Image 1 (cartoon, rainbow, N blue to C red):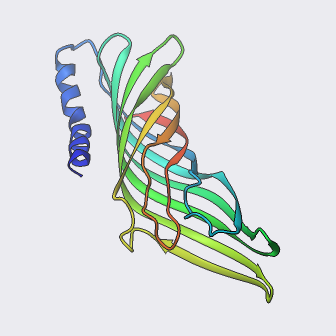
Image 2 (cartoon, rainbow, N blue to C red):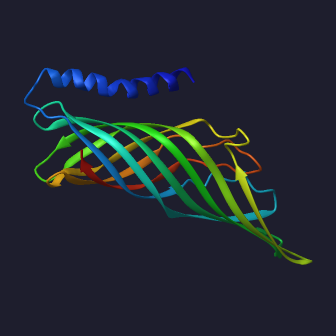
Image 3 (tube, rainbow, N blue to C red):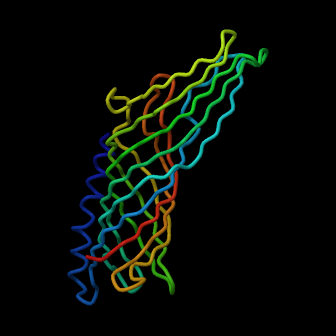
Length: 233
């Protein structure tokens, strides 16, 4: 926890350090942007506890769309290098399917169709290296979890027929979320495609799980793509 707080403070202080750098070189221009765009994220298949002996399991995970809104500052550090601190809000979704069956009796089975939803406020610092046609961006991100839920539809097939059940697990409400998550971003961007309009495409690599195990499930690491459409302020 101490390391987490230190990292968050360091990321938040980054803009102040950048402005100090800017004052040393009046030829560089600091630019402010607001960006909005869709994301497509997919969760790790570590969302269920192991099966009981004698049962087999098939799993699949698919991408689902969400939304990103970011405010960022582009601060040049040199001719082709700049630092880009960001403050953003993300709504993330993922879909997962789990199917269990009794190995010695295939008439017994169950499956779960889960929709995972998370919202978060993230602080990100990207290092941007300009090339002839676009910039290569990469850096760490630390996010505070605002919500983390699973909406599940389960179907069980037994000797007495089929039973369908719906449920929602609210990890935040039940205090089973991890509070904050860390990730890394890598992507390409161009801030001035036309006047003050720009765009960026990034891939997010999750470093930490969103929740602990609760009611045999959890929300694990999340990876995915983010498209930013930006306009200069």
